[in-house]
Every structure is written in C-alpha cells, then in structure tokens.
Image (cartoon, rainbow, N blue to C red; front, side, top):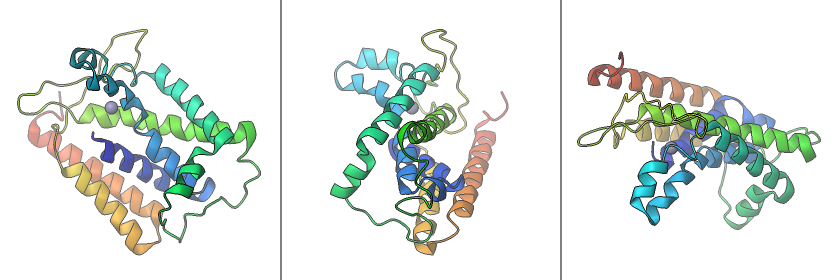
Length: 215
Ligand SMILES: [Zn+2]
C-alpha cells in the first residue's frame, strides 16, 4: 500500500476501535503515523537501489522491528508529547463531535501506563501494516513482493496478492470514509467499520476477478 493508504487505514482503525474516545485525538494521530513506520526500510532507496531491493518489506516489517519501534515511539510521546508539539505548529481542525483533545479521564494516560497505551496503539497500527502490504502486490511487469515478518530469525516470506500495485480502489474507499466522517461529524466508529468492511469486500472481489483469491 502507499503511504496515504497506510495512514488512512491507521486512522480508520483508531476510529473503529474508539481510540478517539479513550485516548483523544493523540491516539488517532499515533495510529495514523505508526501505521507507516515499517516502511522506514524503504529509505535506502534514496541511496542504493540494490540495498532497497534486499531490505524493503524485510527490516522494518519484522515483528522484532515493530516491537522496538512501538516502545520507542510510545516512550517519546509520553516524555516529549511530540504529537502535541507538531499539532501546535500545524493546527488542523478535527471532527468536533467525538474527537476530544483529551479523553475524559486523563489520569491513567501519563507515565508508564500512558507509554504502554501509546506503544500498544503503535504496535497494533504497525501489525495492521503487514496484511495491508501482503494484499497489494505484483502487477504488470512486477513480481510479487513478499514480507518477512520473522526477520532476522527466519526468512520465511508471505504474500497474498489480491490487488496489483497502483490499484486506486483502496485510496478511493478509505478517502470516502474520511470525507463522510468529516461531513457528518458523528458516528465515527460506525463509518470507519463500514469503510473497513467495504474495503475488505473490494479486496475479495478484486482477488476473485484476478484469480488470486484462492491459491
Ligand atoms: Zn510496507
């Protein structure tokens, strides 16, 4: 999936699970940002294409990397409140109905427990990244690009190419969900669940049409 798609999946995950009510908008931002973290292993592309080929969907997509990155980003959120820091400099309007700046009971969201909460959100968002990548693979002139979740302990690779690279469907579906949320300003969780269901349905139909649904 592309960076915007991963971000939208993370945001819908946060709304669908009610993180906006439990943790406030910081939880939504954490999920949207963290859902892109595994793709740090694509950075070598800027310097060395060969290294990119061997490392992308491997180094950052392993459970070990995801676990460590979750601890780091959760720790820095509690110590530095980097989400609040960036939001103060680049203010954006959030749906006023349902996304609070802070959850109703903030006492628990500090110190170690708060760190665990944000690390857990980051962990879930990153784990979601893996199936999202697995189902978007291959295409005209492109080979399937498997992920290696057990790296560096095992090079076992997995891919389930339901839609090819460049398929615009997920972007359209995920974006429609966000537009509906922004317009209605209510029923955030229900809208995100519906968006996720429609996305899954689209993947199944496209995989069936492509002949990759049943392997
Ligand atoms: Zn990825």
